[in-house]
Length: 179
Image (cartoon, rainbow, N blue to C red):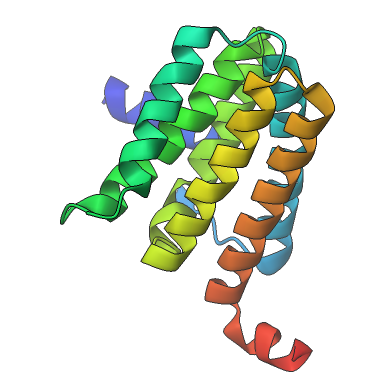
C-alpha cells in the first residue's frame, strides 16, 4: 500500500489526481483553460531556464545535444523516429533546466513537464516533431552563442508553438472557428 499511497500523493501534488476528503482519488480532467495555464507556466519557467543556461551550459552538453539533433534531423529516419524525437524532447528540456543552475527552477520545470508528457504523444506526428526539433535547434544555437535574451525568446516561441499544436489537437472545433 505504501508505494501506491506515495504515487497517489505525487500525482496529487503534480495536479494529475484529485484527492478530496472521504472520496476515492480520481484523475483530473484538464479543460482548455488548464492547458493554456500549464503552457503559460512552462513558458515562464523554461524561458528563465534557457536564459540562465545560455551562460552556464557546458560545451560537452551542447555537443551531445547538437549530435542528437543532427541524427534526428537526418534524411533517413528509423522506424522508431517519433519515439526517439519525444525522448530527445525530454532530454533537451531536462538539460536546459539542469544547466540553469537553480534546483527549484529545475524541479518546477520537471513538474510541469510531467503534466504535458501525454500531450507530446498526442501531437507526436512527424510534422509536429520535425517542427519541435527545428525549434530545439534554435534554442540550442542561442545557448551555444551565449545569448541569453535570444535563448529566452527561442524557448518562448517553442512553447507557444507546442501549445498551439496541443490546442488544435484537443479542440479542433475552436481552431476551425478562428479560420
